[in-house]
Image (cartoon, rainbow, N blue to C red; front, top):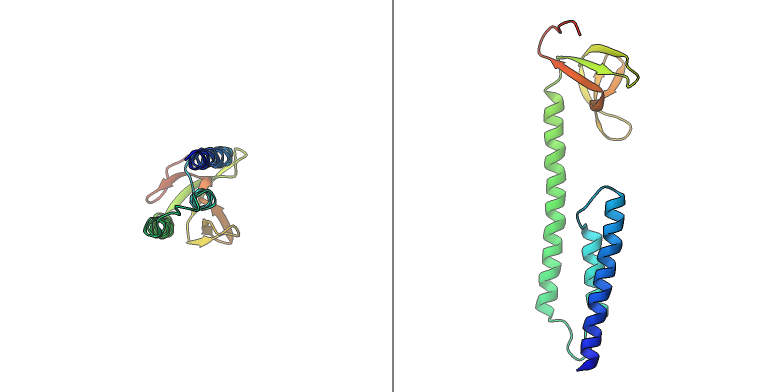
Length: 148
């Protein structure tokens, strides 16, 4: 019985260590949520530290795998919906005048011709032959802009 308790204690310690390490990485990256890699690491630690005389119930393991797959699919769906929303929001700017900045205090008004993907695969605005990121927008005008 003490060997089982030892294994459980080891599992808890390893789980805490993985959570701490993943938490350190997430905080450093500005993300405070556990991701799919953390979930997989925890599942592997569970498998490595299970009692060989009483292995994990296969139905519980299948439930964990199903939950992981469902989380992955939801993440994919969430990303697609967010990208669609961003595209819809950016496309509503086509034909409008926008006050933009170059980040150095120089502002100018442009008319948005189209929405494109820039070299970093981010949504950007095209006016004439120039491309502007959405982060450069200071103000959006519905028709003719007032004097900024």
